[in-house]
Image: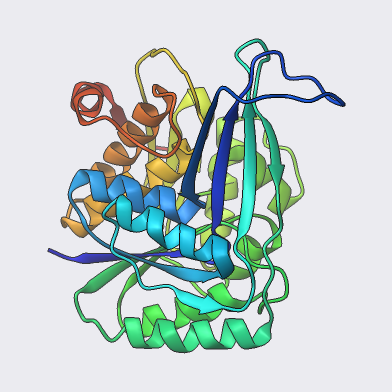
Length: 314
């Protein structure tokens, strides 16, 4: 079985408070609290692990929260090999009140420096010596202060070894990373509009935007469209994926679940349309659950045959 490496360069301890009648400026007492290892790459790792993939998670952690982070990963039986730095791993807080639509979030910014990023590049090179690693998923933002082009270096090292690199980030980091020719990028429509600095009104606009990013260096572009499904643009094909009407409970982590499903199928030697289909199925399954970045296999097995993938001929 091909091994998948996930990279989380700005991980977090995710703290979730359940509070009834949350009010600003007052004392609020929580009825429930959860603390988990968080970060987009960790969500991807969790999905691949549930699917039965051979997964190794890496990234940068530090301090007391970093030790708690590793403890939580180990409790979830996710194999890991993180670089430990002197900088404390961040904490991100989500406040959930059933009487309020949406989730109130307080997100810390992680910190690092150029020495930390250089140390991680060295660690990555050593990990990459494992010839069983065939797919890499790098997800999320960067620690403040590290090399802003670190993803480019990691992609270039991977390409030299023939390892497929999936990049799921946003903004300038994504725009720069495309130049290193990742195997796949996964922007949503809003992220695509931001990096191209224009509105995308129609499906054709979105497809042409995906083609533009392929011209800039990305080998394949998967664009998630929320309730409208997703598009997969390759060098010579265009696919649209749609899912049946379901009850949506929580869309947070659905993009990460999509990446996890896609990467797992890729590790099994599936075709791109098959990888695309499993990715959408995992993203849909995550959205049907209260928890973030996870799937239920019974729901997934029910949803998967209902995912429709069609080729678009222009």
